[in-house]
Length: 422
Length: 55
Image (cartoon, rainbow over all chains, first blue to last red):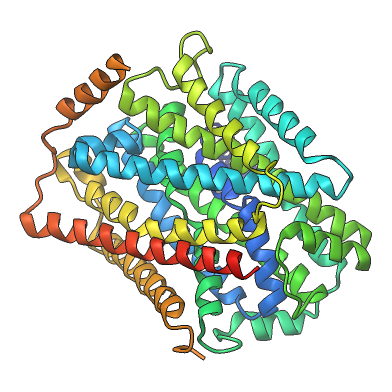
């Protein structure tokens, strides 16, 4: 009896903590899992097929990278109560503000195209024509965002995040050799040597884990959710959990294709799903369902990131807690982005798979500029006060920026001089 | 259209003065970084076109 009495209070405390977390949970997990979007699934599937388990260690490094970058947006949003676009305009002036907004618009729109590429390809496996997928997705997304509550949107998004975990049982079904996964995957190595293709895959994998739109999305979501400075520890936990989930899912996708399709050149996740169906119908179906889910979640979040940014700068009402009549421009930009991106995938003979991979690489190339602004904003003591970046956080942020620039440069050199890294 | 231009002008005027002070060297570094990254993006687009044209 005494034992149970002693257990009661810690358990009640833990239960209360879980309850509190469930209230705060959202932006971190949603943004991170949404980053495992259609382009992401394609990149991971292609990485596993091309390099087997050999790049798993690199994916694991991306957990702290994603956490440190996104955690800064939690602090910035909770302290300033303004979105990322507005913070850049206010901090650095209109010139840099327009530059950043233009970057965001272009990369967001291109990424949105890749989401539609993934969704139409996924449902095409089940015989659904692309135009039906595009129309159905736009209608579904309208229903999700037009209900006029951020809370509902977020909980639905979390449901889609849960569906993203479908790849984990998929990896167990294909029976990978655990010894090989640990031996080849956890010891840093560059299978196939340094060459343009490796740089491309490394960049694409970074681009699927951290992207400019994520900075804008999470900061705006933190503001729309109404998170306060006292909620920052929970926001950090939410972001850490999200970054672990996103990379774990990525690793399992790599394990699936690395086990079943090693050495095969995979152009798209849909192609991987079709190939997998020949081996195991369930795994192929899991990959296709997961691809559609990833595209849908990515599309919801990316179009919202742009609409929030526009709303902040143009002074329009820009909250999911508003009805369409109260925020017409917010919803107009949201649907304009969606519809135009959806139309691209209906263009016959468009090189959709190539677009998907290149968009990831272009997104990561533009990332350092956004990160430099983020780090500078986090060093503004007048605004951030005690929530300012520590020297350690600045070092890590700077290291990430420099690493991405070096990798982008190496890829640039491999494009200009294809024989340099043979 | 006129109101749209007025909106842009209002935004430019509202954010004319950056709140965070940056030295000339920092501003130049930021500009060079931007230009450099855009050159890299241009290279990637070139590579994309090359792949598409080669089929």
